[in-house]
Length: 118
Length: 111
Image 1 (tube, chains in turn cyan, orange):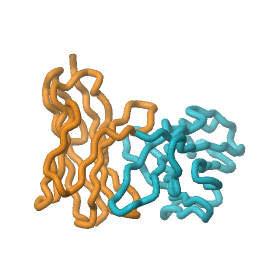
Image 2 (spheres, rainbow over the protein chains, first blue to last red):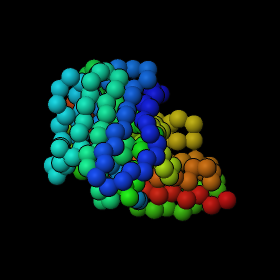
Image 3 (cartoon, rainbow over the protein chains, first blue to last red):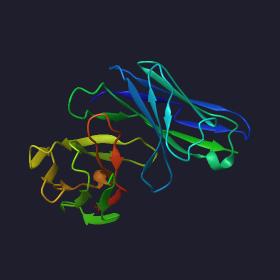
Image 4 (cartoon, chains in turn brown, green):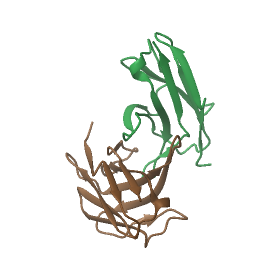
């Protein structure tokens, strides 16, 4: 399957600082990328949908000023957690899909980023 | 109507057993049903997927059974191994939509 690379895999930051997470589709062009948050022993919770060249669409309850998403190219989307607080500590996962051609297409996931805010 | 309900929440089997995980959906517009496997600290990995035009799909030891009329689909793992111990998520989507995930099933395969 296609490869989605997410970086970093782990990050520890101090309260009040910002952290950037990168998501790259390595062997296909992803017009749409998704950002998820996952709590322990829970399912993936969609935070936002990122479309190349346009503003991200955030799910209800997700603060867009806190979780800044940029999809500057067809292979790169970034999630910046601004002014991080301990409650932002979580597992963040990105996903990428190739352009839809008729039927729904496969989604490929990055390795995830474990964010710990101290 | 966007929900996908997954059961059981957790499952323990012995090596060689055949765990079965079930999912049910409501939205008849869904036309793509993948299963993902996730190990602790890792992102989900696509395991196998099915579309509604077939009732069964096999890839190695993994089989999806699909019942369109009942709006249900299930994952069977043949000859399960301890290395299959992971969390499994079913999902569904239709063209242009995001994936809707089930709640996940934590599978433990004992040696």
